[in-house]
Amino acid sequence: AKPTGRYLHKDHQLWAPLTLADFEAINRCERSLPKNFNFAGDVLDQWSQKEKTGERPANPALWWVNGKGAEVKWSFEELGSLSRKAANVLIKPCGLKRGDRVAVILPRIPEWWLINVACMRTGLVFMPGTTQLTAKDILYRLRASKAKCVVVSEEVVPAVESIMSECPDLETKLLVSPHSKNGWLSFQELFQSASAEHSCVETGSQEPMAIYFTSGTTGAPKMAQHSQSSLGIGYTLCGRYWLDLKSSDIIWNMSDTGWIKAAIGSVFASWLQGACVFVHRMAQFDTDTFLDTLTTYPITTLCSAPTVYRMLVQKDLKRYKFKKLRHCLTGGEPLNPEVLEQWKAQTGLELYEGYGQTEVGIICANQKGQEIKLGSMGKGVQPYDVQIIDENGNVLPPGKEGEIALRLQTTRPFCFFSEYVDNPEKTAATIRGNFYVTGDRGVMDSDGYFWFVGRADDVIISSGYRIGPFEVESALIEHPAVVESAVVSSPDPIRGEVVKAFVVLSAPFKSSNPEKLTLELQDHVKKSTAPYKYPRKVEFVPELPKTITGKIKRNVLRDHEWGRT
Ligand code: BCO
Image 1 (cartoon, rainbow, N blue to C red):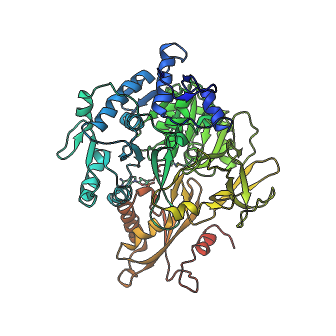
Image 2 (cartoon, protein in one colour; image 1 turned 135 degrees about the vertical axis):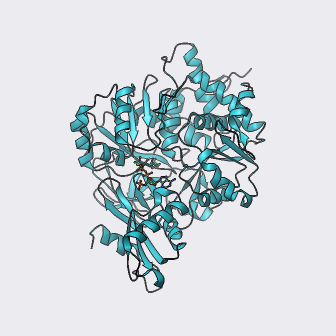
Image 3 (cartoon, rainbow, N blue to C red; image 1 turned 135 degrees about the horizontal axis):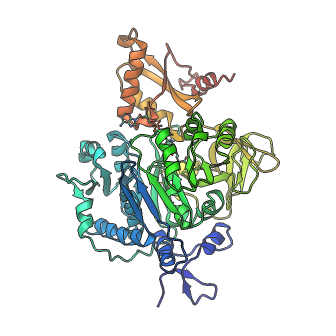
């Protein structure tokens, strides 16, 4: 009989569980992907076994606190049995079937991890979204994905209720809350009575596992689909060499549940190494609570956006004695060398930057043990061959600026996203010759270190968020004061860059008080689309620079903002 694992050994006779060494070999392209792979069965349940045999230290798999006294600590064994119960909730009362898409819009609560793992166990496609999404954003996501189920916390209920009649494919609404609500299935109630017996589905390695919505210059966000192995195996080396994790470590990765950085740091890379994932549910980010957390809990590893470190170095960090912190990471936007230096001077700790994308994961990183060159985002990471290329797909020599690209082997690397769902044109547009193009510009030096220059398109990277100008412009145009607008990035000492809107006013609003109108427009955008996208700077202009064919020249405005000629 075949035991729990699904890896066919070299002799093609024996089945044995996949090991970390197998996953590393797959990432190094020394071994092919197994036919089937399921992160819950092949990774989490293996760690649960190791807990029983004492091969893993007594360290929780998940450690959650809310700063108000509530605390949850689950071992891999507990995570296993609780997520099997959650799987039974999704399958039975919710009536979901393998391959169905589930939109999960939850804050940092333990149930997010349970439902995430439950989706893996049942072969459901998990679609995370930040709770900052507005009704309009949710409507777009549910319709575009034809999601069968939406799982939300209480604060998201009004938004879903206001649009659900326009979502014909939506069959189930699951509420995660201590209170039940008419028209909603209660996760808590169903969970209480659910069985903890569930057999993990044998998902194919290339079977879809998750969909992330990602913004571009034009149009609505695209649906980047990842497979069981791209997320479930693809972060093995990242967990070991960038995050430098062992099963005795406790990692606090700050990212919101809606972003792939949460999947990397708070699920896959960390649990592949058997480390403990620490979560603090802060109602609102604040530096004092943040620093107190590091002094209270034995967190060994910290991963946060550069914006957070920029905020932290404003404080007198020498006053804080971090309990166990030994390794600090950052990513999502470029880190300024001054911040790295200030962090090191005040804490004695290096800051290891990683650079990546929702579509392809970590591309470059300063890995532990590697010399850090100030201002560089490190070297390309395995299995990627990272190059700088020109507009024709030719590799550029060191020192020349071009587009950051990944060389494609004969087959698409397994850790790539599979496609932008229902969008073959945009999927194809990521390929240039023999390369995947990131849309970011950079330079490589003769030692193979990469420097980030900026986006090749109009996408804005603010506080680690990727913001499409079109989405903000579409929100602004809904306001009667706005005739047209152009949205570009503008420098900011804390957030790296922020969203700036140049707005042409309609006649009735031309004499309005500019400060009041700015606030009104900002508030309007926060209500129309996820608030993190709102224009932190607004300038009223008589007209926008345009090409002869009438296309707005965002580059002229952006260059002006950044003081470029
Ligand atoms: O700053 P403001 O107060 O003016 O505005 C904030 C919020 O107050 C406001 N807001 C939020 N919910 C609202 C609301 N306003 C009205 N109604 C609501 N319901 O909207 C603004 C949101 O901005 P924020 O999220 O930047 O807030 P904050 O508190 O300043 O947080 C700072 C950070 C640094 C904690 C936050 O920006 C952050 O978490 N950034 C990191 C994002 C991230 O994880 N990116 C990684 C993406 S994945 C990736 O890059 C791939 C790598 C492989």
